[in-house]
Picture 1 (cartoon, rainbow, N blue to C red):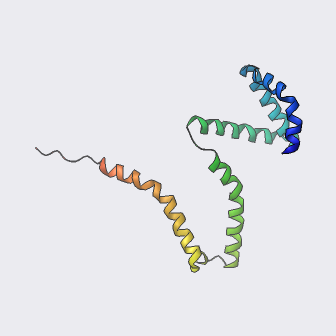
Picture 2 (picture 1 turned 90 degrees about the horizontal axis):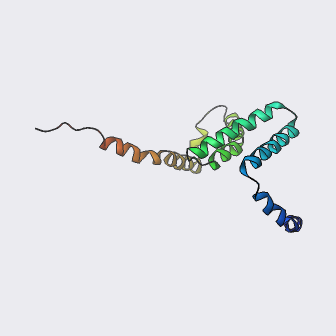
Picture 3 (picture 1 turned 30 degrees about the vertical axis):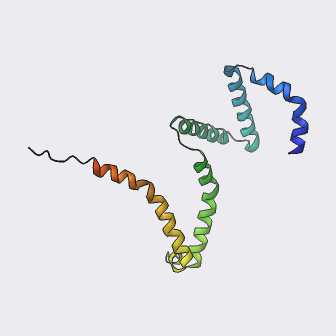
Length: 137
């Protein structure tokens, strides 16, 4: 964005100075600004609790090497999927076979099922190899 470039070029020196602030001071300031921002959007303490819960969730995901992008994608696309599923079931009067009657829909579901199951295939292979065999004397 050109406007962002124009506004931030004169402030480069200030941003370099911000990087020199110790983490033990900078972190509480960032947290304070986040809390103020979250509260000012909805004016409810519940929003602050949600921010804290998702902050802890993000910390745990980072600590245990989980990617955050799939979770964000699920939160963005989840309601869209639910609404369209509901519309489809209303159009078909509750009949799930509507998802298998068209070849493209059936092929998409088969590919999605394969993509869900394929990571488990090596796991089952390892479990089969780990079955102890009786020792032959």
